[in-house]
Image (cartoon, rainbow, N blue to C red; front, side, top):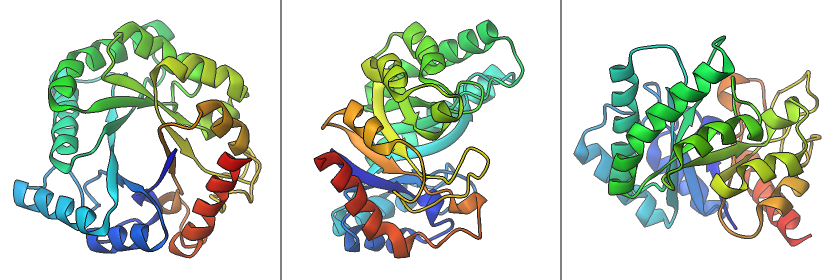
Length: 260
C-alpha cells in the first residue's frame, strides 16, 4: 500500500514546495487538485506540464491523481462535459498520473437518469483513457455518496479504465457500513481517499486518528495493494490546522493502521 496526500490541503502552494513537502515527510505520492485557482490546471501548456513532471521526479514523488471537477451525471451540454473529461485525461497522461478523479453531480435528477447519463459519458471517455494509460475514477460523492450508488454507474460502463474512488466520509455519512461499501466497489476500486472528522455534524478536517471515521476498518478491507490518499479539506475550512505540520504524523498513523 502506498500513501499520497491531496493538494486540497495546501491550496495554491507552488509545485516545487508541494514536491519538497511530500519528499521531506515521507509520502510516496500526491493527488493534484486541478482547478483554475491552482498551479496545476487545464490551461497549462506543454512546457509547464513538463516542468511539473521534472519537479516531482527530482523529489522522488509520484503524481498519482489529477483531481478534476467534471460532473459526469450533471444535466448539461454533452460536448462541454465530454471535452472537460478528455482534457483531464490528457493532463493526467502528460503528468504521468495513473488516475483522473471525477464527481457524479447528478443533482435532483432521478436515479435512473443520473446513472444512465454518468455511465454514457464515462463510457465515451473510456477508450481515450485506455489509449493514454489513464484510469477515470468516479468518487463516492454528492448524488452518489455510497459505494452501492457508484457501483451502479461503473458497473454499467464495464470498462477497466473506468473505476471508483472510495472517499470514506460520504458512505459513512449515509450510514453505509464499510463492508458494504467495499463489497460494492471492490471490483472497480482504484484509490481509497481518507480523512477524519469529529462528527457527522462537524466536518472540519482533523489530523488522521483524531476523529471518528473507521479508517482502520476501511484500509483492512482495501487490502495491501493500491493507493491511499489523505484529502485534508483545508481549502474549505481555513481555520483547520495547517497540513504541513501534521503530514508526517498522518503518514505514521496510516502505516500503523496497515500494520495492525
